[in-house]
Length: 251
Image 1: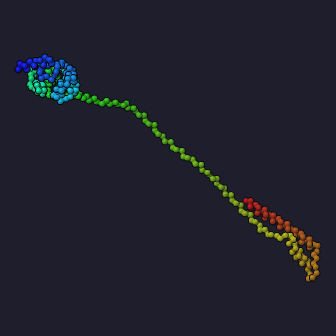
Image 2: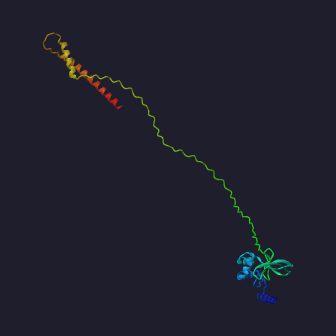
Image 3: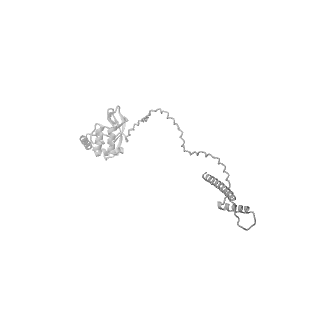
């Protein structure tokens, strides 16, 4: 028994921490505790086994959420410590007023500063304060719309197609055709004179004798004048008829 007490005293003197401590050396702040968890594998393993979290995560949690404070009154807590066989066991322990402890973000004592032994089994996560920022509504200035210019429909100009106006044909009454005087073809003068002369000779001969009839000079003269008149009358009528035909063709 005396030997056990001496061994414990020697270990305490070397480490300056009580037997069964989670720590291997004393710490005075949450920063020192986080550093020891990162650098000392044995300390990190102990806390990781107890809280069920990785040493790196625990070190960050200690840095961001723990503060050092003192108990205002003596209180009995469930304290966890390391047994001789290395297991983690718990027991009820009364901590006196003024004992230094690490407080969590919610003000709960969770670790005894002197030995680093936990006073709880879990670490509550700090709730994320969600600030609902109302969306900023940017109201665009309303611009008064000017009345649109009325659309004036301009009647389309109809396409003017030139129309050829035919001048009225003046109907000229045709002059009634002149009555054409039937032209009697007159035999040539020699053919007219011969029968006339023969008739005259027969008349003038008078008798039945069979001799040659010799007309008188006066009879021949009469016949000649009559034949000449008939010839001139024929030529005149013939010229008039030819002229009328030409006029008719020119029209």
